[in-house]
Amino acid sequence: MLTGIWLFVALIVAIVVMIVLISKFKVHPFISMFFVSVVLALLVLPIDSVVNTINAGFGGTMQYIGIVIILGSLIGYIVEKTGAALTIADVIVKLVGKKRPELALMIMGWIVSIPVFCDSGFIILDPIRKSMAKMTRRSSIAMGVALSLGLYASHVFIPPTPGPIAAAASVGLGDNLLLVMGVGALVSIFALVPSYFFAIYIGKKVKVDVDDENTESDENAVEEAFQTLKASYGKLPNAWLSFSPIVIPIIALSLGTIAKVLAWGSLPFFAFIGAPIIALSLGVIFGIILLHTTGKLDKFYEISVENLKVVGPILFITAAGGILGKVISTAGIVDYVKGNADVLKFLGILFPFIIAAILKVAQGSSTVAIVTTAAMMGIYTDAASMMTALGFTTPIAAALVVMAIGAGAMTVSHANDSYFWVVTNMCGMTPEQGYKTQTLGTLVSGLSSIIGILILSIFLI
Image (cartoon, rainbow, N blue to C red):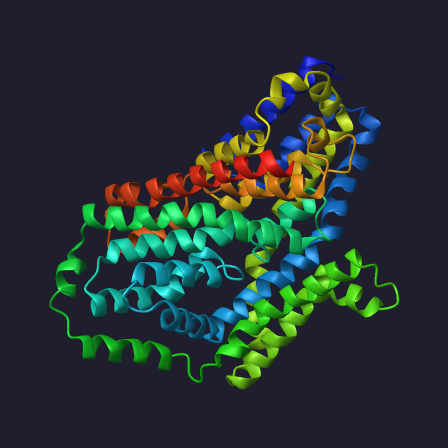
């Protein structure tokens, strides 16, 4: 059984092996993390405690986060399939105006990706991007980058996207999603502002064939094409119903938080609806109403099955991350880190950012990077966690750690990331142009985000 510095060496080797298995040998992240966790447990734990530690890590994680991830993802699927995302997009365009199409698309993406995966969000909104590019005669690349980075910001920072939800639960904020959502919305501003100016800049530098076609396009024909896209969804919901699956859970979570702060013990109803499982259940109920009003209620079973197919791997990866986190906390690795905290503590909030960024660059998936890093950090109230070892022992500190992990998980998107190819192909770019736009853009977003997080940590931690 390893002790002392060899514990930390074993952890580093385990992380490297996990990255190599996922990125080079294309082993599924769940299998990779589970295999590495078992081998690490055999090296650092008494053999009679290995099985119980693995079971505790898997079961404990699923207990707190499984249902929340499923419900959050289901809301996103309903918003996508009912065409509510298009209605939301229409509202944003009307508010921002067609004179600022890049800003409109960035805000549109930021809102839509709160419940919807960024890949799906880009596919849904790309026809709007193309139409706006033709109608405004502006750079389609600038609009594509603005849309992509707007989607990405909420994808890594704001629940109920599965990655941030899983990270919140892993660090002990599963019952305080409203805090994570609020901090996520704030931090995303640090990502969005530089990303907007980058989109405008890169749109002048990178050109594709469609930009030349746009200068000769018929605005009436483009508007007709856009209306055809909307018609393909059948009956679209109104704005109130379209926003409701997203807004209602936020209101419920807010009421629950207010009830806790003001100690409304005589009004347990508010605490009840403020629980994340119940709040997101309310979002699903309003999603079902969306399905009914758009005549797609008969598709609910099909949508649910499709959602479970997508969210299943995320649940397993999250659970495998829980196993790794449990092994780390049980083995005494954290005690060693505490004893040598000065070596790592100078990194502060950069520590989870760097780990997440390494995982992101190596294997491509932001969700895997978020889930794995958060599991390694552990719960902020657990004296045996990496969070405690590095001094992150308050809810706001834990929320900023989740943000740092999200910032790392967007730095950077390149050829091993499916989102890179979605954006590159749908914008008509070559891979080289994709590196200049999507890859460089996510670098700008990630670095500007962590700078903002560092500034916030000075005042809040």
